[in-house]
View 1 (tube, rainbow, N blue to C red):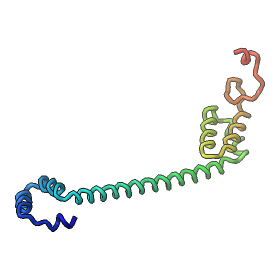
View 2 (cartoon, one colour; view 1 turned 60 degrees about the vertical axis):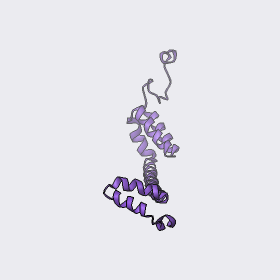
View 3 (spheres, rainbow, N blue to C red; view 1 turned 90 degrees about the horizontal axis):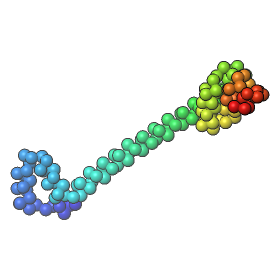
View 4 (cartoon, helix red, strand yellow; view 1 turned 120 degrees about the horizontal axis):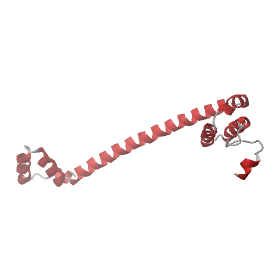
Length: 142
């Protein structure tokens, strides 16, 4: 790199001074005459992008940790048989299934099972998904 800087050819300085009025030409000419400058800029740009990507990944990891902590707190709150027995039977089957899917997704399947069990105790219609009573003959034939 220093070898190019030490070159002081009169023809190059004349071209450079003539091109100084045209910045685009000067930029192209500088890259053509000094390929290490272009590589340095490329390295700097790559380092900047890597730093930005690292920051984005760290931010995502922090946010995921916060979500997991909040989900565990919610699971601890919902891991109460009294609460589940009073509320779960008032949920629709799809709502109870969605709640159970959430608790299974955040690694709390025992809470999901608790809420589905309490929901099933309140299902009194044979057409309900979680109905646990005896089925009539018409329901068995269909």
